Amino acid sequence: MSFVVKPHPLLSCFLSALFSVLFFTSCEKAEQLYSNNTVRFIFENTQTVPHLNTALNNPGEFCTISGHNNQWIFSSPGYKEDFPYKITEKDRLRKPVLGLNGLIVGVPFLQDGNKPVCFDRACRKCYEDFRVTRALILKEGQKATCGRCQRTYDLNNLGISDDGAKLYQYPVQYGNNTLVISNY
Image 1 (cartoon, one colour):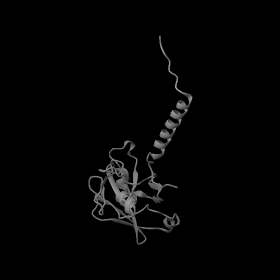
Image 2 (cartoon, one colour):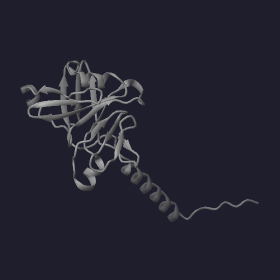
Image 3 (cartoon, one colour):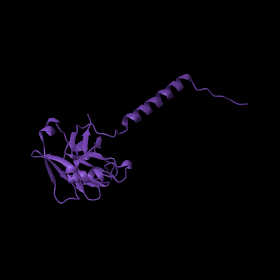
Image 4 (cartoon, helix red, strand yellow):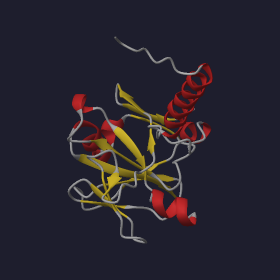
């Protein structure tokens, strides 16, 4: 003799509603890949800037991009000196925004397809906790370090630090010697 237990209709409704809430709540809390911080940077003729050209075409290489005194400044631990590039009128008309405090661009070792990535140069933890946007320092070994909190981010591992903080990341398109970093 077998018994079949039928759940009460209200219990079935309750369990369905509970699972729906849990499912949608977990989806909402999942971290999105790209930051909503404004970024817009278009750079043509990437091959004319050694730091950027190296970073875009060699896995494990990264460079920073910042703006200062009507120049783009490209820096990389693989080069002794920064590379200044005069901002043109065409650049100004594009109304560039370099995230919170500049950009870090390169191709991670651990990624398939040699596609470039872009991170914000500001320490995410310092920005979220204190609204501080001090620029990260690019180090050998594909690391970026915050001079304020001493947190180190691994650029080959999605910009994640040892304590799980992750750098803000932006969408990148690269082809025909043109780099486009934009989220709108």
